[in-house]
Figure (cartoon, one colour):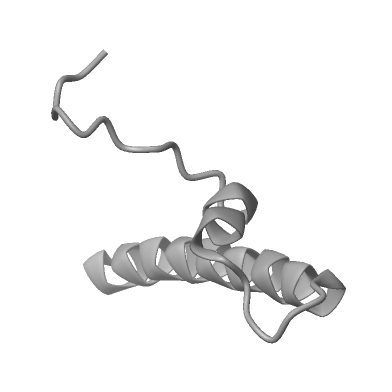
Length: 57
């Protein structure tokens, strides 16, 4: 049974990755240039900017 449980976790992670790739493809198809800027990629993926000091907060 342990094999089935790990496969379920991998499937969940794969589905999240597929969803994120889809969001990037939608953004890329709507973009004017050849490439998405790093800032736009972060916005699409909902990545928070890192604190350069490394302080949490």
